[in-house]
Image (tube, rainbow, N blue to C red; front, side):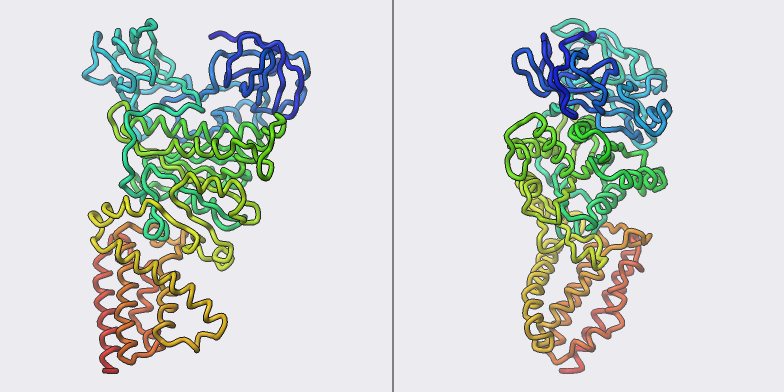
Length: 591
């Protein structure tokens, strides 16, 4: 639809504009305001007036300026060229904008989201021929986007009909027409890319149960509080507790095919860290740069507040696009608190009735709508894909009772609460084993027991029981001191200390320790539990805790995360034999 004038500005209130004389605008329509063509979106319509939230600085706008309608909702361009690109909150490519306007983004700058000049090698699906009846989501052909990502060009959702023509194999730009389909509404031309509204979830054939874990290589996550592929998790924590660093570690090492990293209102230096670090990192699966499977949406705290509100929808729509091609996508949203603050500011400027702490009454609905777009899906193309959402929450002062954290807990099934004391003690990841939980555990136990070991669930449960016992014993220790406890109870505290240092604490800068396979995690846990079980027997036979602590094999157990690589599983067998032999000898001395 061609651009037309739909009204004029009546009042400017920060990023919110009141418009008058509205004729044929529709809700959520993308508009351009003033001669600078500032991008905005219609958020309210009342008679001949409208409220528009704009995604750029409104300085200089004045009553009487024209408002131009596009006839389209706020949309993103989906096609070859997304991987490795850095966008802002409304999918403007920042590298291309930098070439035009250097460090400062000029208002109204209009750069296509996808490069219109780059050629992509398109290979039509061999079974397609004119006259074939096409349904939405069917595969038209493929484009090799990166060395690892083969992008499937799909018939966009909502389009189905008789295939009239498809182009020959060759190199084409993204806007080149590659097929024509006769639909009930007439002939539709299909190019290598299409647009999709960011606030509308992309359709799928069927939602599947979540039965596979998303392996992150972080032991406290995978073993104690696992996340399923297609699941949702919140990472709340105060300033400096390691939310961003935890998300960085997951983005680097998780077994998702594609990472969408959304810097939603965070400080610029945190996004700079991602931008400078990720291109240098090597993807362990391919040996290529990690950017070859990453899409970055950089929307920092000094960018317009309403673009922050749109950024998470932009990110999740791009993730759904790759999910529809059969890929497993992980979204890092950092942080949803900044996004909620954008909602609060926009709501205040629209003079809506506030709810608790000034947030709009519809905050829970918006949070639910975002997390509900995760899932493990059978797609329209017949492929199986997933979107997993890992959302950081930044409660002021680390107060988990504030509204954003509490509402998020209602809609996610996994919770990794970060602890200030652990972070201060340099224990990373600083995920609290007392406040965190995962509701995916029962669903993914069969995967662990089949792929890793039948005793995994029992070992995990036993270790969690010990951690709970330790909490109660430490309360007694605070009152009467450790010497008042019998050796059997002091040994519980000792084993939990070994578990925290040798298993839960993980060094992201150590080549061996930064990533642990599922099998290595299970073997490490099993060794610590052998120390617990046989050590308890030795104490009952008269052994002392001092003797148990001084065992040479125990020191090797504590250092195993640094000394045994993921592929060296046989070293665990030798270490286990030495540990068992030492514990048996210690117990037999006192018989």
